[in-house]
Image 1 (cartoon, protein in one colour):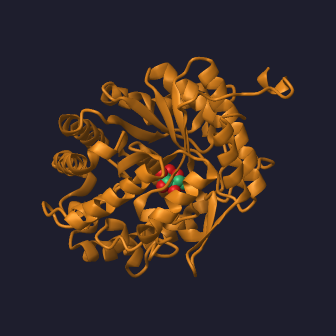
Image 2 (cartoon, rainbow, N blue to C red; image 1 turned 90 degrees about the horizontal axis):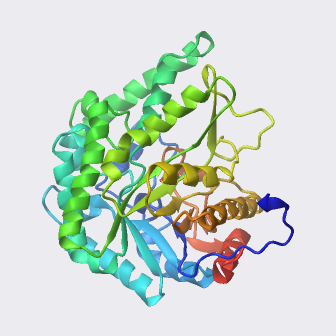
Image 3 (cartoon, rainbow, N blue to C red; image 1 turned 180 degrees about the horizontal axis):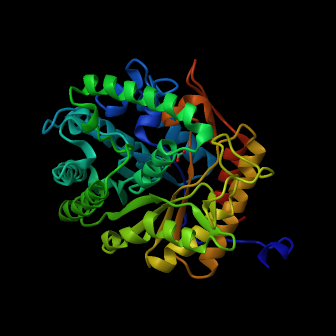
Length: 429
Ligand code: GCO
């Protein structure tokens, strides 16, 4: 076995994309026209804290890209914020376009390849007021925004991801259903939680000026029809981008666990793979690449998903520390979707940076093994470049290669950042 060969040198291909990812709302700050801004700032918000000025990446992007390149990385995955580009329906903000033009210009100056995501969870408030991600008109609206951005900026964008984790609502729906039908011991907690959620949604309805049932943000539980709308938004956007920017490589990103089973759980694991991945394959056939995101595994037994074993090491997110999952997810994805793969996210929330180093090593060993077997993995983007706003969980979860002191916005690269950078520079693990 690979791991048993001492001092084996694993060399990566010459043009491998070595990078790190961020998402606009999690790092830029003051994303005031977005749906999340409202959700974070209303009374009784379910967010532990608001994003506020985040890590001020909107202002500090140039220094951050400089840091990334200084470490030895050659690729930066970031997202463009729809709510900045189109704060009111049909009104496009030229100053926002100019901002992202400047970001792309900084990438060029530093010789960094940009991978741009056009939707990373947040949407403009007006989109939610117009029915959000359950509206039949959303694919058209999304495609119009993508076409606009790519007609203005596309020349500087070699890789574009339409929608980040387009399958995420599947998992959210399952979590909600589990809570709603919770076992006896949990009923008290669930009733309390449900009441809080109802109050929160009532407040949110007032803030958006629509009824609570009509709030369909990207991360809300989705109907089957809503899932189809998301994937139609992807194909429509892809076709529109091709028209204005035939040179860009276009893909989507999906979050995939390494689905495993113990005896008796095989059907559950297979079913999960179908629901999270296989059912969407028809929409991806004309894509140029597949953006794969993996953080851990989930294991199934005869009665469904098994809890994380008591003796397993867990991350700050509560899930299992499992860097070896990436390799098997890449293999599975390639088996079913014969396309080049970019690992658009993979990482670990921890304060123990040695764990991050070990995680990166193991994950990259897996990527290398896949490449050696002929799977076209074009790049690996670590999540995340910077410690940032982890959505409902706020700033307490640390995924970054670079620490940020938010009282001064000072950046402090961690040892793992230098470690990953030196792997990238030598192309060797
Ligand atoms: C997601 C997103 C990121 C997260 C990251 C860590 O997967 O939820 O793409 O925005 O911050 O995955 O949880």
